[in-house]
Length: 415
Image (cartoon, rainbow, N blue to C red; front, side, top):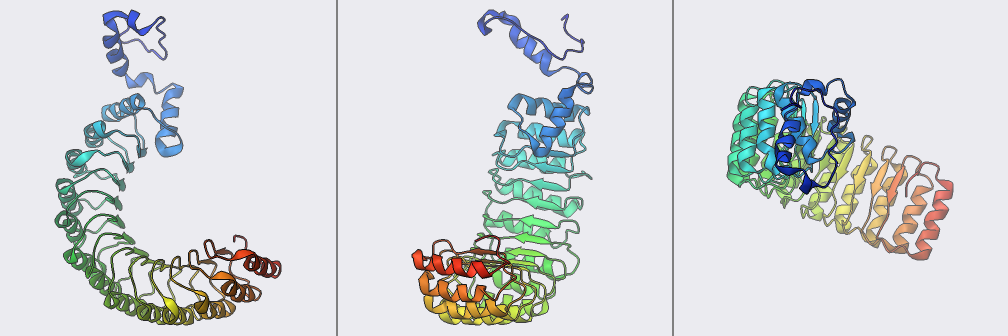
């Protein structure tokens, strides 16, 4: 009782814990309930501020103190990074802190397993919030209830500009609800639903959001969502979209029709900067069609086509487009079955292309003959700065040829 109200900064208790007697639990409660005003003039407040913004680590006691301080209105961080802190039991306290009194603009709770109920409470807390702009809830075991509540939140809240719900456990119905809410939302610019489950209906709603001209979405990640034929509809939405800068549809088993639709959209779309459609089993004829689209596109700067079997016909068509493209800076073709006989068109493209800066050809089994063709092209290409040839069975001869080319090439800085 005598300690209550004192502006304590340090308290030392000598002796083993078992000698502290029955007063120890009460003492712990006293310290946890200490007035936060006492901390504001101490170094501890500055240290917590620094470490909360991601430049340091907080232990569980400090996190609980921090959340109680935010809730009491004595601590006003704008960035709260609690990712990977294993605070599943503090999810409710986070929701209370945000709802009662908060200045938080960036809230990162990724990889904390907060669960579905706490996610619903957090969504309720954000209903009338006008400050939180970035909300990251990746890998938190959020199920249908949480997803549906966030779908409702997107209909009411237009302050949040970034939402990450990737790697959670919601059903396709609940994830589709989030997509449906995007049709009416006017604030969200970055949506990540990767590694959740979507259906064709989800593709319909996202396509509407992209094509209606009123949704300011700039980054969309729906990779590995089992979207299937929904990718066809999503690709159609790209045709008239003028806001999206980055689209990731990797790992969705795109059919040839979807790849053709993407190619057709790229002819008209000049806003998109990054396109990732890796691991989609795109066939070589569709790859060739994409090459023609790249030839006429003047907006794309980064393309990832990894894990799509191009073989010879696909590689030839793609390289024709790359050779004539003047804006693409990065091309990723990992595990694309670009074998020895398919390297010629790529080498020829490198001779004439003056824009490409990064080329990733890892895991393609180019062997010595393929590297020899690339090495000859590198002697005349001066724009490429990064080349990845790992796992290509180069052998000693291939390495020697590459080294000789690098002696004449002044542009490459990373191989």
